[in-house]
Image (cartoon, rainbow, N blue to C red):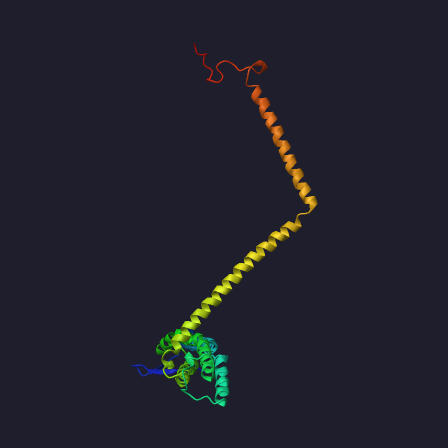
Length: 294
């Protein structure tokens, strides 16, 4: 391997060449190595920054995905809850009323005839009873929707319910509202003016029936408790056999004998506190003082 030489012209015309020695060559190599090291550091720094950026970016993506998943699960839960809560149906008396109406129409009944409320029997009376039964059965449904409506409107205004929840609620609300108006219309056909009071009457009847049912249930519960106590007493009486009764009497007699023996022992101990022969010592009763002079 050859080494480059540099020629220098001296003042006297001679030439001289400078050849770098080994030490200078090594120093040059070290300087080159020192010059390369900063590039390596920048590469490592770049990789570290890239890793941090990737970690932060990945965390952000994961957080967004997790939040969406939680929101989806929450909405799915509430969707199922609200769908069950508002998946309501009209009670059977609704259909029963239309069956009665069809029968009465076949018998020649016409809307607005007479005053069924003052009649004891007849087509109008039968239809009035069927319609009142229908309205009473609707009362729990109406109360349920009135109770839930305020909360649902508040949730919807704050965007805290899903579209499925809201549509399910709206469908149930429309169905109940339609039922209320339909009952009023039928009441007006049966007897003019009844549409204005039928729902108030139905609410009163429903309250009375509910109270009667609660009283009946409470009475049945009380009777069940009494019956259970009687059965318990009978079972306890049957469980006492003659042998058990005899053992109980023997135990009682033994207890009484022990008490008599204990009384005798106490009496003997008390006798020792008196003088010989059982005579009472003078002054014993008055605390040991001398006898009083007469």
